[in-house]
Image (cartoon, rainbow, N blue to C red; front, top):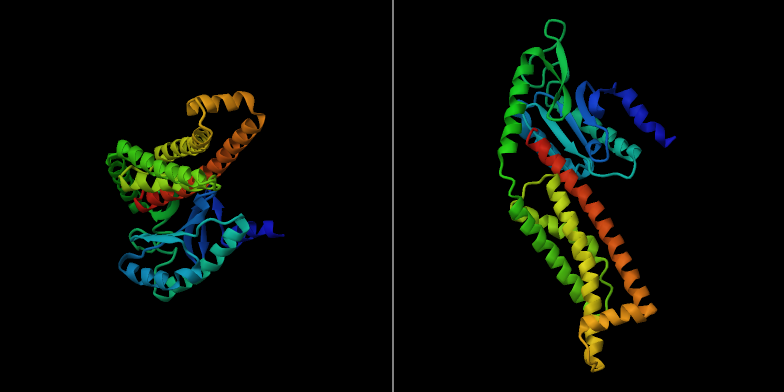
Length: 314
C-alpha cells in the first residue's frame, strides 16, 4: 500500500517524466521539477517569478524551516530550490514533500507570487498567444516562454564557464584531506594504544578528511570524493597495523626480548595462530568500518556537490 504513494503523488500533481530521469509537475498551480535518484529527488525546485519578493519567501522559510523539515534552500529570481534531506524510502520522502509543498505553495499564493500561468523568468502571462516550452535548465526541466529560451541558454553557458574556470586547487585539497586523515589516524593509534576499541574512528576519518579538504580550498568535485575515500581507507588500515606494532613493541620491552619490533611482529605472524586470527579479524573489522564511513560520507559529499551545482546554476 505504501508503495503506491509516489504514484499517487505523480498522478495528483500531473507529473510528467522527461529525459534523464527528470520530472515536472504542477502543485496548486505552481510548476515544480525534480530528478529521480538517491540524491537528486531530495531536491525539489519550484519554478516561479519571485523577483522582488524573494526576501519574504526567505523570511517565511526561516521561520518555518523546522516545521517544513527543509535541510536547506536556495532562491533566485525564477526558482526556489528545496533540499529535504535523506529518507529511507521514496514513500516517506514524497509524503514529506507533499505536505511541505502544500504549505509552501499556499504561502506563495498568499503573497501573490505568479503561478504556472506566468513565465518564471520574465513574469509575462503565458497561453496561446505566448506559449511555453519545456527545456532543461540548471539540471532540471522548466517551462518558459519562447522569448526566454535564448536568455536561459546564454545564462547557463556563462554559469558553466564561470564554475569551470574556478581553480581546482586539487593539490591544496589533497593536502587538506591528507591532514584530516592523518588526524583521524593519530586518534585511532592513541585510543588503540590504550587498549580501547578504536575501529569506530574509521567512520569519522572520511568526514575529517572532507572537512580539511574544504578548509584548504579544494574544489568540490568527484575528485574530492575519490581522494578522501582512498586516503581514509589507507588511514584506517594503517591505524590498525600501527596499533598492533605498538602492542608488539610493548611486549618486546616488557619481556626484554633481543629482537626488533618488526622481527617480533613477523615471528608472531609465522608462529602464533591466535595472533594471526586477532590481527586479521581486526583488519577486516577496520576495513568494514572504513567502507561504511566512506559510503556514508560519499553520500554527504555528493549531496554537497549537487547542492553546489544548484546554487551555482550549472
